[in-house]
Image (cartoon, helix red, strand yellow):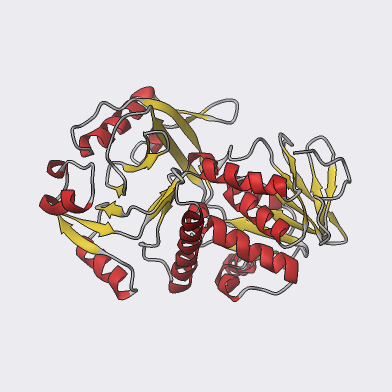
Length: 385
């Protein structure tokens, strides 16, 4: 993969020149869909692909929450695209649909009924029967019953990003890494490209900002306010250990899924107050917290295997202030699109597809109508004294 020169054109396609900021799942997915549509694409990242929130996401593929119906439908479409990818590549070990098991607070009966009312596959299972439908769990560690969602799954986003970047390279995309802080270049109130920390200008007809939790800061001062509710998260990945778990678990003390290489990936929220900032802009946590989280996971598994943390990554997870995705062109800055959402994993493929379609055709996709950035400006105006 080459590097674009300052002021150079994006990629090698015959369509519009488009530059994408952010090499997490949303940026990479959109870039690949743009290349498939004939655009010339440059993908610019502050550090390296997957080095932000995509590299520390549990990446539970689901739509089991109390989402507005239009959000639920978008998430279902996102899951559908993953199933298509898996059908085309059935041997992938980083994308699976082996179900989800939930008992993370609230009434399971009410949650199950609400899901069933939407046609979402949901079943209450007594703990004594769990072993028949979900491998690898210790029934004695479970509540009296759990909620089973057989259609849910998980993905390792770093593996998916590498997979997509292979196609990105084959289609002639240009990848720019270690660009440092990047800003949107404008001319006459229109986005005309990206400018790197070193002053390199990557010109484009259209710009997409998909910089994770950094997205609001990139757009600050451009007349495109984004309400920011981003919060800390920590993902722990274990050393290889034989286990039979295939489903995703969401419990009060740990959320847990398989990870490629006989590993397990996990996170939770109870320890977030223990995370402290470093002087270099990063964060630290007491290693005992990591040990405790790993022990919480072990207690749920059959045989209680001794799990050892191999790595843990801490950083901000991108969350719009109202909790809903922000997807589409900024009305206050023509030519500049934004992708900012907490659902980066579930929406990764479908959001990239729909945004690319809009950028290539100029036609607003109806499924993105509830998630337009202009609602943020409207909310800000309504809140002004």
